Length: 348
Image (cartoon, rainbow, N blue to C red):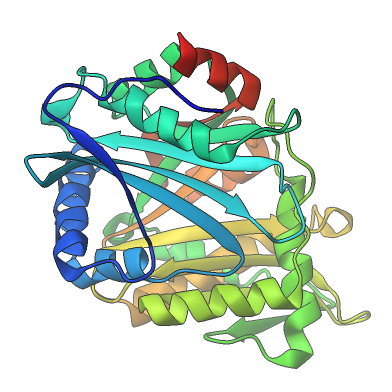
């Protein structure tokens, strides 16, 4: 497909190679990211330069990432990204994001960047585009609606103020200590003896409500686990995983994990928490969440918040988080649209 979408007067759009990106262009990407994050999370301090730059520079053979910069007078004022995964699962999905500096919106940059991504995808009846928006950035929601995309999954983004965490409640939950289960901590790379347990943990996230989201179950492999670890290491990120293991079988029964960047210690991201269906109803979710929270309090004194996202229909996990003190911060939505619909939009 060749698009005829015009670039707004006074701007240029150029493809930006992820490998070998210049220091000057990295600097401009970081500065633009700061402007976007101030809009998205105004309560946060700016993340340090290198914390953002490392995410820009680190690439992976498990993904094809194509990106385009929108420039005005040689200055980066917007960018678009298209990512295709090569992990063997959901390879028909294309993650597409479009971002413009708040001062350069409503001029057609988003449409022009979106058209570049659609053109790069090529053809394929089964291809679906994925994207996400935040309720804190209404411009993003308006753009998604204009393209014709549909909000397939509503996510509640919650945050826990660690100074307000009820330590007595966490100690109570931590003492649940269900009979027949033990805990295993993974602070860095996964030991070979626990690889199967980690794979089960990640794959249990497939039981999360998807609402209208069209995708197949993700299938984790040892290669994927090792590649995720390499990327975190090269980005300078920390990761902490807690497994609850059924002692009778050695299999994973529940897990929770956190990740953060020591250069931006104020916020910790809750990656996932899930209990294998046949082990539910025993308090395992509360147990692992409480043990993790108490360790965070002891070992990350610079942390202010833990942030997490849950499907709006995930009542069980939302109930645990609410009891812990998590409160609504904002809402996200995951949008989807068939490639054919995206092509019709950019041709209009």
